[in-house]
Amino acid sequence: MQWISGAAGGLVLVLVLTSIVRTLVVPRGLYSMLVFRLWWLLRRLLGLTAARGGYQAIDRAQTWLAPLMLIGMLVTWLGGALLGYGLLLYAASPLSWATAFREAGSSLFTLGFASGARLKLSVLDFMAAATGPVLIALQIAYLPTLYAAYNRRELEVTLLQARAGEPAWGPEILARQWLVETETALPDLYRAWERLASDMGESHSTYPTLLTFRSPRPHRSWLVGLIAVMDAAALQLALDPRLAPPEARLVLRAGFTALRDIARVVRIRFDPDPSPGSPIQLTFEEFAEAVAMLDAAGFRAERSPKNAWPHFQGWRVNYEAVAYELCRRCDAVPALWTGPRDFPGGPIPPQRPMDRRPDDGRPELPPVSE
Image (cartoon, rainbow, N blue to C red; front, side):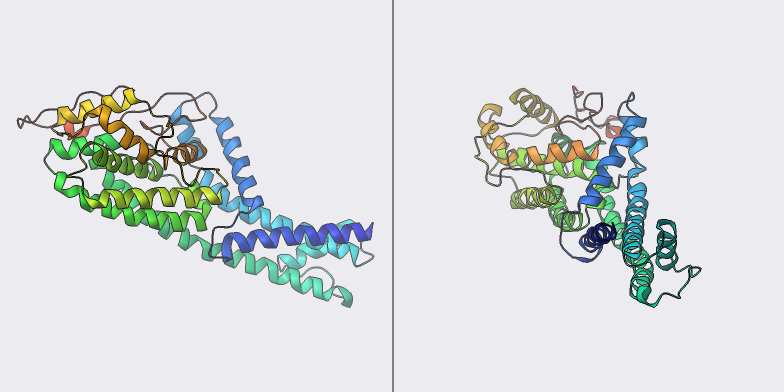
């Protein structure tokens, strides 16, 4: 029994310490089974509390996912360390189960009320005493990094709201720019999101817990915003390749590279080199409706919707499947062109506060069908 206890305790400690190092120390996106199982469990439990509601109920429930993840990781690691050291102390001494775990807890949390008369247990006691404070210190040092990346992300998401609506939608970006004659600002937008996509690809794959951090407003989402900017770039390249800025290609490359980096960490399978002619879930009818809206806003396309569709499809095939799966797992706001969700309700079209303005002679955008 003591051999089994010692082997089990050693295995538990190895799993816990490996998870800690993979999550908090190694500067690379490594898969931690404990962390992702905890994410899966908490997401399911929070989803059950809003099972009968639509997106608003899901958003209110999932707001708690990030803080619960941070607390849950700490509790899981400390609990695993307590279990591992307790089993090892039981295996290395004549202590009872209760006394062994009392000894482990005393050392792990540096309480100091357990007896220190057993010299052969000193090594395990000292190891446990070092594990608790070091783990808590690592978790505390982990938070500033997370919130710094979160603030950089949400700043650009907030700035996008005036350009893309809320929730963001790719065709809306182009329509608004042509409607108010600010299309010359698109290269700057693409450059900003190219940099942000690279930043998110690095930070969200290194610290996957960031995927659970939701935007302050329920209809905003970093993931939906990135898809919208990429769709806008793909639309512009497909419809008007001669006048499309080179930054459109760069933001598409940076965007789907970032999504694939995150997908590898969360173990989403994808085709790394899809054929441009591969089918996508977005339909030609949805594409043609968006092109008609752009035409009403003053966008003059070089290609017809039929001729532009294969080019748009060739761009979108690089990121659509990964983006849809990430949106589903993150319970992102169900914006247009972002795929299905696990909760009831259809897509939410962008709100248009810009339409409520004095008449300046410019046409208004037609309503968007869901």
